[in-house]
Image (cartoon, rainbow, N blue to C red):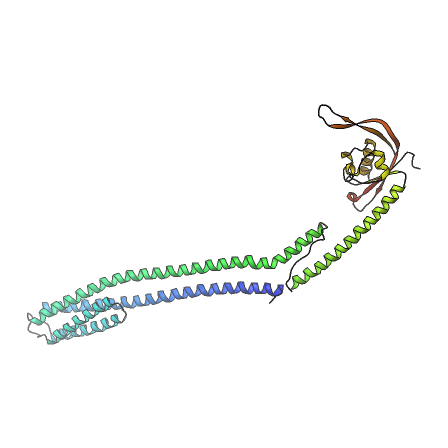
Length: 389
């Protein structure tokens, strides 16, 4: 399907906006994912840290109560309080266990729960008056094992915190890489679009511009090839029609000039006087046959050459230069045309011309043919033996 220039420009803007939106949503997705993962890790870490502090406090309270029972006569309230501390400690360990998926962590928590269960059972059976009995000794052992297990759990937790920090850094680094890759792909895609789309739009105008430049140089053998059915295609077709018409007109003009030149050449040769024409640059552009015969020159020697660079007699050159300088008519300027003799120079082996006797003496009138600009003027010289009246 062929789109018009307007629709193609609109489609280019739509594609550019779509690229910007996709890039924006992609960056937003990565940032939102990063925020979600870090928030999840942070919330879980905060809850675990809070529960760990509660477990620590409970463990310290159990140790204090254990020391009180060991160092003094325990009361039923002391044993009841220790039993309550064990129940609270178990509940905290169960909550802490729900946050872990690692087998090692669950084993340590399960071990502490087992010790607490045993401690609670022994406390329930311990006699208030048997301080040195087996029950008191078991309480000491179980309390020490609970502390030892909690220390091992804390060491494991410190290691997990380090692993968690590395995981957070890894997530941030991965998100940064993904965003960087997205930005690079978007940047390359934007560059590709900026190279392709403007080229597609500007190429037809470049073809038209090149064709116009050729027309400025009077080259009508050009055409604009553009097969799209849009505004530029319509412009290209109209320009091609114009070029064809201009080519036909130029051909007619060339033919007309050729006909007029032949007429002028016929009339100039019918006149017995000598005629020559130059442009405003001093270049000879025409000379009739009598003038060729008088000067004994060929057209290749003088036509389209500056007068001063030819073998024209000095009197003719000076008269032409004076007329061009003044842009005015010159009347009855005296003209002397000497005979030229070809002489070989022995030193260089080249030929030169020497002027001998005079072969023609007459008068010249120069008539300026004015144009709108001085550099388009022409000057026609008519030479005769008689003075012009």
